[in-house]
Structure formats: structure tokens, C-alpha cells
Image 1 (cartoon, one colour):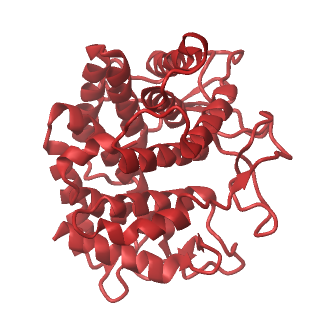
Image 2 (tube, one colour):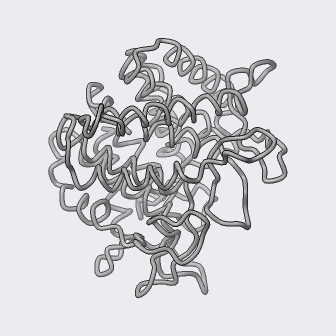
Amino acid sequence: MTGERAVQAYAAMQRHLYLQGARLYRESVPTAAGGNPFAYVWPFEEAAKAALYMRGLPDVGHQYAADIENVVDRLAYWQPRRRNGIVNKPSYASYPPFPLGQGGDTYLDDNTWIALDIVQAYRMRTGGRPARHDAGLERAGQILDLVSAAWASDAQPYPGGVYWVDATWNRDRGAAVTAGLAALAAHLHDLTEPAGRNGRATVDRVQTAIEAYRWLRATLWIEHGSEAGLYHDKVLGDGRIDTAQWIYNQGVPVAAGVMLHRITGDTIYLEQAEQTAEAALAWYGRQSYAGQPAIFVAIFFRNLLQLAAVTGARAYHDEMLAYADRAWRDPSIHDRATGLFHFEGPGRPCTLLDQAAMVQLLALGAWPTEQYRSLA
């Protein structure tokens, strides 16, 4: 039944939000008056992630192979030459560059998520076999170079961490983007055969992953109190800690810990991932995930499933499906006539982020558990 629901939710997303001619999505339906014709890169990326998860559905997944090409392999946001920003490296812009749009700033977290989509597409295609040369992994490696170059080595206080956006107007350093750097570096080390003298590049990726994770633990991890085991949101540009609690900031560090355990064999990373997963389930579950956007919840659970692939824990899968089932059955959220989800309330627009979140949760709920190892 979960797989059938995923098929319906994805069909509604493609019918109402996908623009076939441009191979892009709109931000919401209905489109806001005076709004952009296309979605920003983060909602587009989350729709691409949804397509990847549909590709992994048993029996029917092959029907979505062309969609992977359309929304994963043909991203229109790529800018090989930068005209703004501090780090002078190719990146994905926040909005399609000319001729489709006006372009935009480079958000390092968005770029990390796209690179992880590329990694996952590779894992699903090859079973995770290491490769010396692969065009997709080479692009992901370019993004790793970009995000690594945004490391705040001289920032005070709390030197280190990755800037949220490559721009002078914001100097925040976030939990999710820094954990994303750790996860991406670990994945690329795991998937890339050593090349060059002593496999220097792969050694550097291990060190990048470890350094990013250590900063995260030392700076944003909460050791004591009712929120122990969770992570704060970010270090603000003025050096203060933003103590906001967002559920996705718990999921990405869990995935980083799982990958560090995979490439180093050190059990401490797995223990820390389990600690955060359990603390987050207790903290946010008590609140029925109130105040957490659906896409943040989706990010959280898809990362916890990577931990489940190692530990065999079933609770993460069951809790994810319980959340998705409540949303599906709630007529104030799920419009059965259109198949769209309106988390902002009846009569409010359906956003691409909300629809993609539900597709992800439902599709992952129908995956065989052995496939969770291919998640990124």
C-alpha cells in the first residue's frame, strides 16, 4: 500500500508541478502572483531525490528511469563560471542562470545535497562499486572541492565549519552543511579507487570528513540537559550560537557518523549516531513533529534509514511510516482530489518541497531494507 501511495503522490507532483518543456519544476501550485516561473534549486533537488527513491521501488521502479535523467542528470542550475561569491569555483546557482533565469547565490548546503544525489544515483546504478573514473562522481568531487573551500579556517570564535552561503551578506556556519561535507567526503572516499601517488586524494577526503565531524561535535552538539544528544542550528555571523532545534540538523550528522564508521571502522561514530537518533526521536516525537516542515522530517528519516542499514533497527522505518500515514489520512493536509499535500493548511498552495517530502517518505517506506545501504 505504501508503494501505491508513493506512485500516486509522485504522479500528482509531476502532473501539477513539473514543466515538461523546460525540464524544471514550479515552486508551488498555484504559482504565487509575480513569482518566479521556476523553482529554486533546493526544491528542485528534493524533487530529484524523490525521483531517485521512486526508481528504487520494487517491481515498478524501472518506470522512473527516464525521470532520473530529466531531473538528476540534466540540472539546469550549473554555472561553470562564477560571477559572484567568494570561492571562485563552479557551482549550482540558487536559480537557473541565463538564458532560463537570472541565476543567484551559491548555497553550500544545496550544492552538497545535489552532490549526494549524484552519489546515490551512482550507488543505485552500480551497487556501490568503487570507480577510478565516473563522470557523475567527478562532478560530485567538484562540489566537494567547492564546499571544502568554504571552510571557515580563520573565523572567531569557534574556528571552522562551513559557511551556509558563498556570499558576504551572510557568514553563518551551519550544522547541516558541515555534516553534509563530512558525509560527502566519506562517500567519495568509499567510492573512489585510489589514484595518484599513495592515493593522496582519498586520504585527504578521510581527513576532511573527520575534521568536519569533529567541529560539529565540538561546537554544536549538546552534551547536557533536556536536549542532550541533539545539535544546535548554527554559529551566527557574529559568533553567537543559534540554539534553534530543527529536526534535519539531527539527521544529517547521523548519516555522517554512519559513513565515518563505514570508512574507518571506528565504532564511536556509530554509537554517536545512535545516540542522536534516539534523542531526536524522543524529543521531536513527543511534540508530534510540530513546527517541523515536512521536508525537514523527510531529511531526518532518510538519514536515519542509513543508520538502520547498519544496526537493523526497525523503529526508524515504522516511525517514518506513521508520520506519512497521518499526513495521508488528514483531509486538512492531503487533497484526495488532486493528490497534493497542503501542510500550510487547506486552501493554501502546495509547495514542491512538501510534495517531494511525502513522495520520499512513502517511496522509502516501500523499499526493501537491504537497499537502505545505497542511500546518500
